[in-house]
Length: 83
Length: 69
Image 1 (tube, rainbow over the protein chains, first blue to last red):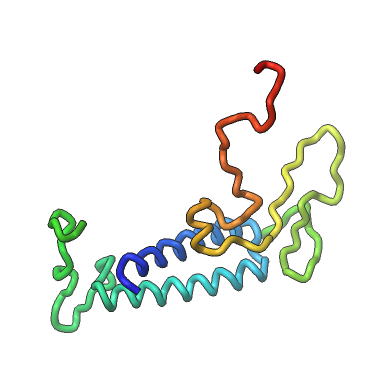
Image 2 (cartoon, each protein chain N blue to C red; image 1 turned 90 degrees about the vertical axis):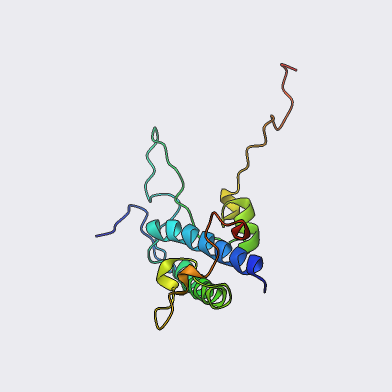
């Protein structure tokens, strides 16, 4: 999957989790909604890890700190290659 | 504690019916949302909801003609 598809997948899963969150706020014992929330949460985490592994951190907490702060490697927002 | 007048017990663990047990006249009731099969994630993002029954686009015109035309 290329970057756009991966990011699109993350967006789709994020949206799905927000919707389920709203439903679960008023239906906290709904087993089907709970099972779906768990499923999409795992899908989102996996998609995010795949994206970060390939394209670098999206948020600074995902950056590596073992020897090099790779947060600085991806293009800065104002750099042409960033958009 | 979380409680609600609509309590009923069904297998899905969601113990809330659309309407309370007693519905006296002269009152308004908004049916309590029930679980339904949601859209697939790509469709949900486009439609703006995962619940088909909440997918209510504003169509920008009247559904049926009326006498004013």
